[in-house]
Length: 238
Image (cartoon, rainbow, N blue to C red; front, side, top):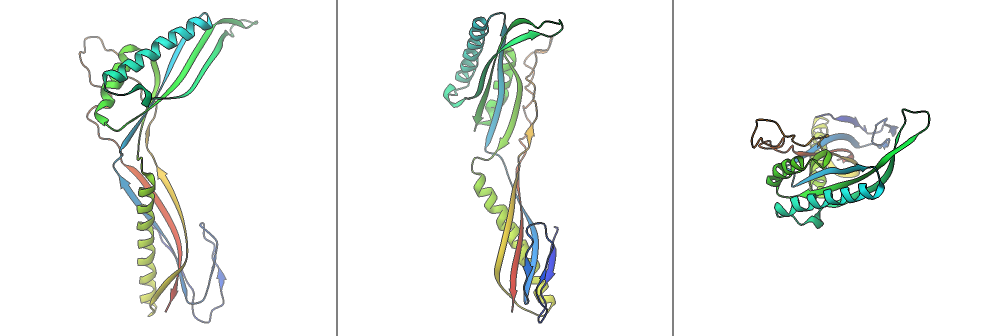
């Protein structure tokens, strides 16, 4: 636990403290403390993200192929008792593809790309969806992130933990100086979320001679979601 302390002494004029969060002036008969707090929780939501990509010689052919791939994705979701409407399209693009190996750019086709985001509460569905998407060979750049839907509650708990530590440290300083700890007259807090993504989790590839190979996420536990808080507080001394 990292703490930073400054004690305002009786009859001593106020002086400025150089602190990171924030710079304040400690008054006489006060104690200034900084303390950290933390709260960890098991995630309640899995965020799956992947791309649908198709390239053909004509824009219409690329669009039609991407549409068929999107329908395959919707069917996979239905097969896993998931309403396709729960999946969200982040972006959709249709771009020309050029061959830059020649002095004059040559148009060689068109590429359609769409990003899909899916939130899952039932983590047991992650592995079969990953496997089925791999079997269709229509998606790429898969990623999986675990998070909390109610992040505000976790932030409040981290803040409470930081304030408890700050008060404990301030109380110890007050007792050491034969004083009593009064009310808190000032506080500032910084909170940060430490969401841990699983970067570029590539889909399970078909392996010759291996039947029913497990998906990459199977049997592994999701990482916890950690929220940290740092508080700077000023307490009066009795």
